[in-house]
Image 1: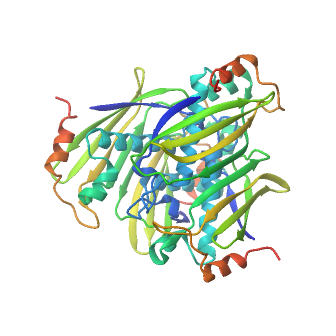
Image 2: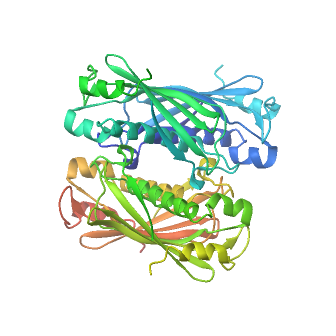
Image 3: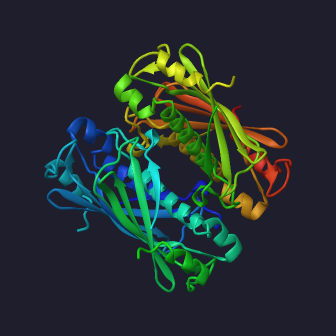
Length: 132
Length: 132
Length: 132
Length: 132
């Protein structure tokens, strides 16, 4: 499991003082980007150096509790790879409260091409973050 | 069914020339906002004047085809109300190609309170946009 | 002068009910993108087909009055070209109230290269929108 | 001087692989928010607990060098307070290269009211970050 802290900012919040959901999606996407960098395969190198990417094909999120400016949100990401795809499973906690959870389903695809098997080194990167 | 045209902008696009998905989510949310304005109950008046809102509890989207800068995307929204909730169903088309589809599930809730029945006038607003 | 109407959305607004300024900047940038499309040289074609762009080198904005969700903001853009650069001058009005004004200074530069003269056809596009 | 590292993300970048400037403005605004939190007066508490804010009245930025995904940008903020206003001066460096610099001019104003003097405790917070 990978985790990072996302601090909800004033500029993320709405007239009720709670985070706009497009800003939550920004934070989710930032988390996927941070995770790929953490395992040594940042999104920006995949395209340029490896000629493949992990485009999103499906996303689903449930929002359980609102987020407020100043909240220190613990966002966790657990990868769940299959042969040619990977699911990034997310949970977001503020203290003991689950704020939201869900997943992004991504396929492994050649740039301008079709689905391919996840390369072994990238798969090993994912596997190191799967719960034992 | 409500529909609007979303033009994908240069600033929405990534190094492959396709739209970043957080920018797609911005466009989705803008569509829900435009729809609520269209039926006479803009989000910004619900909170201030009616003391309720339609917070998001669940979202799911499938992405079928990439979007490029300059694409004129026909985004449709069909509301599907139940007693205390409404599902906004979306489809996004570029010509005859379905780019993405999915839904936002929203509950009808008092500001700082629990779920309530959708008021009749708002329900009538939704019903006018349900397919016959 | 080019103009468009920007409707401030609920998702643009902050706990005081006024637009976050990064959302104003999004609307400004969208306006520049709409203008370039209007004159027949959208940003996304310049790079791909003409091998030059108009990168931003300088921006300055003054904010006179807050914007609220639902405001129909008339954003005007007047281009002021010189040999190798163009200034986009902006004003944003809500009714008779000036909400903000300012400019973006852009240079005409080859992709991965230095400044060049603005091509004649693009210059003519700008000139058609200069005040007489 | 306050400083933070901003990592440019894939989702911040354009078809040339460089950061869209609205995403740079997001990072600037995030920096101001982080700074106010650092000195003990986060934006979200000023409004709620102190009945004043620091709305933006003027901004000016010069962009010297493009930013790329993966860049670790050192963003510095130096406050320059006067009686009823404060200027936040920014510089952004990638290694020894100045990427952009500029300022936000903010007034100290009561919520729904006019300009007031910066309260002493907030002023002391600013002064601790002024260069000697």
